[in-house]
Length: 337
Image 1 (cartoon, one colour):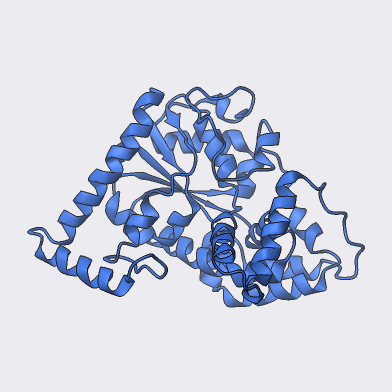
Image 2 (cartoon, rainbow, N blue to C red):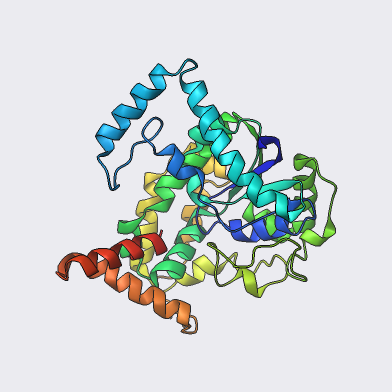
C-alpha cells in the first residue's frame, strides 16, 4: 500500500488544498478529504505523548512502551501493526475510486514527520512551502477574522511548522519533492510536469485546469481545507501572492508581530523554505504602517461563524457556563486548528 501512497506535507494556509485539487485531477490519483488518520497513531504514547485525552497520558505512555518492549520485534513489530491498521483504511478509500494512488493531505502530519517517515518510508512525499508571512496572514484572516493576537496565542503555526518542515527537507530521509507555492501558481504546467515525473505518472495537462470538471472519484463533500478561495477558481492564480502585504498595510501592530515571529525563526530554516531573512525584512520595511486600511472581505456565513468562534475562544476563560462552555471550547479548538 505504501508504494501507492502520496503524502502532501505543508503547513495550514500554504496552498496545500490547491495542490491537492490539482493532483486529484490526475486520473491515477484519488485525493479524498483530509483524513487526519496518522496523527492519533503518532500520539499513542510510544513516539509522541498525549497531552489532552480522556485517560491518563502518563499511564498510557508507560504502558505502551512496556508493551512494545515485550514484542519479539520491538518497535518494528509495533510499526507493522500501525501500518496494517492504516493500510486497511487507505485501501478502503482507494479501491472504490478505481485509481492507483492515494493522496493524503493532512497539514498536521508536518508535526509528526519522524513518525511518518518510519511508518511509511517507501511512500512519496510532496513538500509544499510558501512565503511564511503569506501563510500567517492567510491563517489570521481565514480562521481568526483578522485577530492576529488571538491567532498567535492559540496556534503559533510558523514557529511550529517552519522548523519541522525545514528539517524534513534537509534530512531527506524519504523520497520527497519540494514545491514552492509561488512557483506553482506562476508556472503550474512546469511544476505539474515535474511532480508527475517524481510520482512516476504520465503527464496530465488537466491538472492545471483542475476545476474545469469534477474529478472522477472525488469525495462528495469538501472536507477540511480551504473553504473560500480554491473552490472559486478553476486553475492556479497569482492573485494571492501580494495579498499578505496589503493585509499588513495600515496595521503597525501586525507588522511588529511579524517582526517578532521572524526573529524567532532560524536563518537556515528560512533558507530551506526558499526565503532569506533579509528579503522578508525588506518586504516588511516597504509596507506603509500608516496606509489606509483596505476594506475587508464580504461578510459570509462562513465568516460569521468564524467571528463567533474567535470571540468565544478569546473570552472563554472569563465565562462560567460549566459543561456547555467546555463543549463549545472543544468545538472551537477543533474548528480553528
